Length: 113
Length: 113
Image (tube, rainbow over all chains, first blue to last red; front, side, top):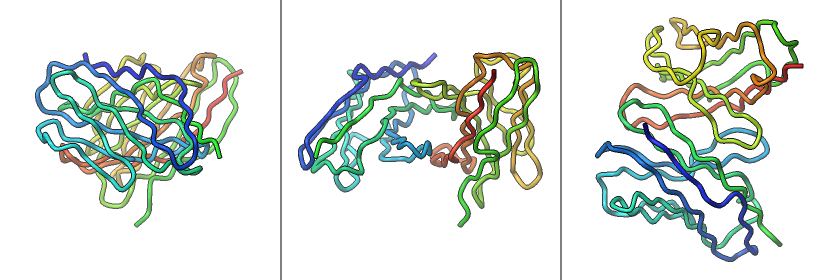
């Protein structure tokens, strides 16, 4: 069974600074997707960025980028120029051929003005 | 384009009762999945429906059941409610293809007393 681990329950960063959230996963599959979701107090899961395992190039979406290390099974999220609206719970998630999402425990990100 | 909508937003039930949660999938999506998110935890996969049939299930007892209708909307039914069933229940819809992203609703907060 696949597992996803987020070792940082909470992180904080100054506004406009850069922060990196960590995620590791375990799987025996060779083809899969990895995701970072943001969950603000509104409760809706919002897709931030996704990475296809067979692509070596790291995904980037504006201020959000990932560092995908397939051999190490590591998938970290970097947020540049942090903004107050980035404050939320962030979940790392795995999706393989079963198509279900396997989530980590989450990291609560606080942005200090 | 209409997003994923869930109803109700909140409800309170008594232990032993039964509850039905509803989800309308995003236009063009034929697959619906349900997740349970306990307070402070990551979401856990309950099951997935495609073309009105269950085609994947997580580690949840049979008292958790579901339906998908011809218009791809879905229901989650929970019988014999227990206190530990108190959680946020998230519905997500997607197209059937492997690389189709999941779109989540705002969830239903269920409290069992």
